[in-house]
Length: 294
Image (cartoon, rainbow, N blue to C red; front, side, top):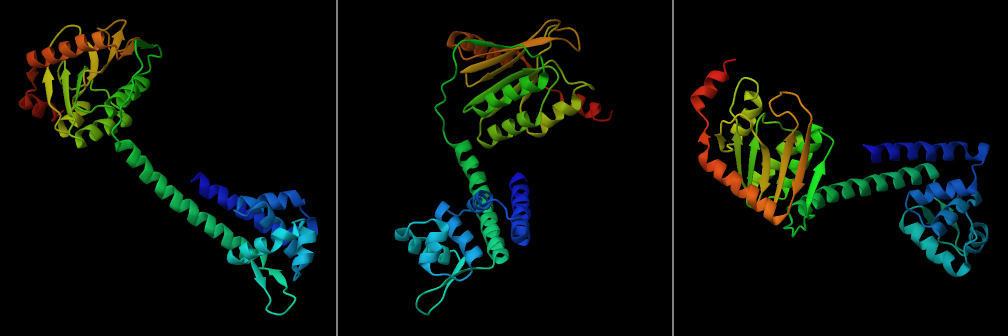
């Protein structure tokens, strides 16, 4: 985890500072920067650093050494006492002393780690909350073309579309191609009671195990046999994606993909897929059992 790695590196730097400061004399600005990265303010860093150098000292001495205004010095010292980084004597005049740097630094790092763990947990919860918020998404208008021809990029785009679904998804596929992002998006739809339907050319030895994943999710699949099989995805009658193959009869080929939220175009494709679904036939489960033996 990057945050943990950062803290470990910071811990090493700080312990280096503690054990070798008197021999090497780190630059003051470097020491203050490290202390501030652990959560101290500029004044707090100056005062703590000065107390490490001075040992027990009066507020006036600390103010002068730390270059902190006298009007602020007691406020800063009180803050450091609350953070258990400074001790104060009971006699008069009061003397202030820095807590041993090794103890103080370990405590500051532990506090920082605890804060990061809490923040990480809150961030995870926030992601979940934001993900399930109802969205009034404004889709980009027009017809967009993706030139890359890389299947994973197309599948990720389909996953993005499917996550926006609120009512239904209809997909025409040939190979039942999938990705982790696409699977997660489909599962998310099913949890939200979004209807997912698939139309395919057929299920055979080549695509059986990919098709089985969809069957295991209890997604309705129908077969529509045709020589040239389109690949189209429609979501809620609001957006459509199509894969355009340069040589659709070949097994491996170059392709482009288009995406659109244009109302006229989407309506036409939405009606086409709904009619195709009506004409398509349910998959033959007996044939699937024989394929499972291969």
